Length: 445
Image (cartoon, rainbow, N blue to C red; front, side, top):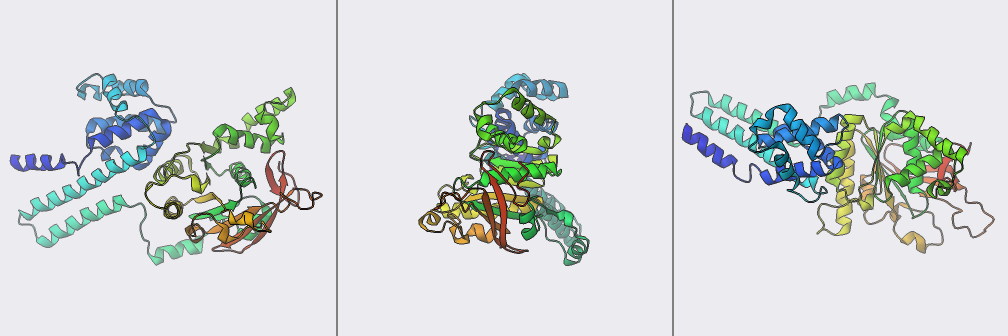
């Protein structure tokens, strides 16, 4: 039996069953950057770590982040000493933590390291199931029972490796009968909701436009209205820094010109208006991430974490073509297609609504009519295929032939709606605050 245990330990120490370097690296990423820590927590559990000391450090980081606190070398060291397992370390906790931190220079690869750790964890579970079956086969237990138990163990490993499971039609029928309007979340733009009915659970909506038409402006208007109606929103701003997003929100909310806020050209009364925004409790329901280099794996992990922790219902991504692909050797169209499919999968797994902004290709600029079409979606037809809804945004008078036309009209062309109507929603455009509002009232700035 001692020989068997030595053989088992030797096999589990093999690189296909554990990666101590990946465990150190993922923890180092988490200590470097809080958002990387959130990505790690969204993918891994403490039990996924082969090294118990690494698992202990993961537990410290997880506890701090779930409490909404930052964690660094000093805090991690103090928490380790408080937990009581510091005596298990071969060195002082500060040296242990610093060694972990120095393992990896950049936090951007956290999702890659986390997936390696998770893969090795699943392999160990499968291996342990095999070992248990091997031992039972040496006994006189009925073979049918051994096989049944082994299959059950392996099925649990398979269940752990996927995030979604098939359901019976009978169970699904209950959902059909009891389905309510609460599963649809409105944009709170009346003309748009009248056509689409809102955004359905597990859906991906793509909003596309030429540059400078106001994709981000409409997206920020939507996240503001969602938050005001008590729906937590996660906004990935791939191009615009957090401060710029906040300035846009401030302009929309106060009605003060965006340029005046951006350039700090406000008088005392206007400054007081901005300060009053701090009392707006809906601001606490908007979460903004402006890290430009996120991969689809990192986005998935962050979304899963914020759905679990903050109850996020709507995710807005500005914009799709800036999401970094895991496979840089593929052609760009293939990369975009994979990212598009992955976003749809994320919406389904997390039962959320994803609104993803996208660019149109340059063909629209070559036409006399700048009115966009579905075929103008940039780089991949897969975007149209995966999307439940496609909105094409334009402003008819943005580049008027007759300069007497006022650029105050916006149109959302609902070009695709999987479970609803298509049509055109008319909005009012207010340039100084870069705001879209309902056409009928032209308010809401």
